[in-house]
Length: 150
Length: 250
Image (tube, rainbow over all chains, first blue to last red):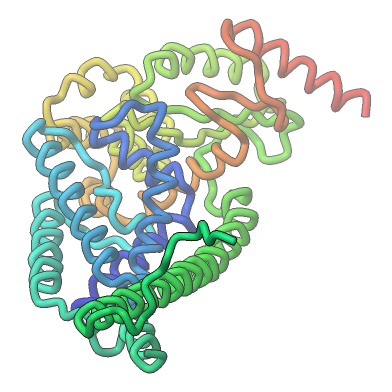
């Protein structure tokens, strides 16, 4: 439950910040990675921020918990890949594009990778040890209601 | 009368095993229907929850944008009297070659019009320019020491030198050298370039530019009206003259 709330909370918070602040700040961070054609960056960035919010909400509340956990794991893998290629190519990242400019964590690209790897390990452990109906989740409430009906 | 219907096996005719299988099949079907119903409820519930959260965030974001993004919170580097009848506002990027080429034009215009024009500089560092942000930050730090335009000119004059730097640190060292050259207090400059307040000031300029639909650099506004594309020496002069005429007839 702690892993769910911490990891889901981070995704929810960072997603909210990205929506609240000028979107160009996030789009610029994405462009700095030089992985996507510039023309699709606004569409990709706008989708990403809402996906982060959706997955964060689902993981915290424990609704479609497995799906949310897999989604977040996928995003973490994507972030680690993007950061690693930026470091390998010697790209200058003015901001990792993680938490926007409202919260400045003062992180270097390698410390962001470390943070993402820690989150990835936590999510992997969570997925491996996940029970069909986990406590304190909405999934568990639905499962209970279905067994009562039967 | 003949009966053509297909004879059905009465349940009594089924063996116990077959009856059990039939019941199991029915139970499975029932369970599948129940599961589908629950899945639908979960999907609807998820959409409603996410919709509520996203809705709140979007409302907050819109409220912030209407207030923050359109109001210039911090002062911009400027030249000319505050009460000048014409305000020439530029959105510029220190790493943009056209901006470097156009700054002497602006300088000449300011000289020619004297107190009639006030010039306001705004940062709009483009993401494809990797040292544009540190250059903008260096400029803002010079502004804090009232020497913005001194450093501004050097940064543009030496654009080719610092944009060839292989790392951000190397570019930063060059900006520090230029800053020292124009007589900035280097202790204050050193702590300024890492300050979040200064980075926020650059972001504020960007947000303001976007609110004014600035898409590239240089972009000029004369008394709030955007100025057409190059040649700037002609178009800026014409826009300033028009603005002066307009204020004279008022």
